[in-house]
Image (cartoon, rainbow, N blue to C red):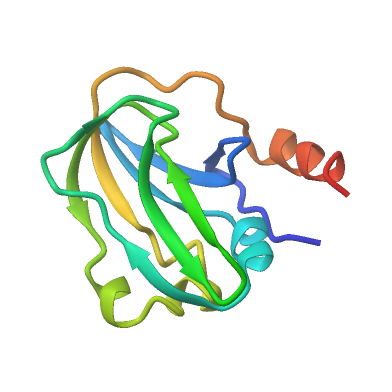
Length: 126
């Protein structure tokens, strides 16, 4: 069973979001990293780039596949986790610590799931 952390919000594309004020921190979920397998490369988004919810924001390459990361919220990228450039495997070690980027929100997120709803959603994928 995939680890789901209470207090985070989740997209059906398997991104997690932590929101503090108007700053959102975004990464991929345990389910996503498990499906990908060993992560070998993370393409980070450009800082100061604007994205709308649902747009492709970066890409993760693994030994199994390449996978797009979709922006679960709308806003401007203000920081990326440059540590992932040298150590993409951090996503496999702890995907909830190995965030990918932070954004300043341009609007409040919609259509995100809480931990309980995301856990229920995962059950439909088996």
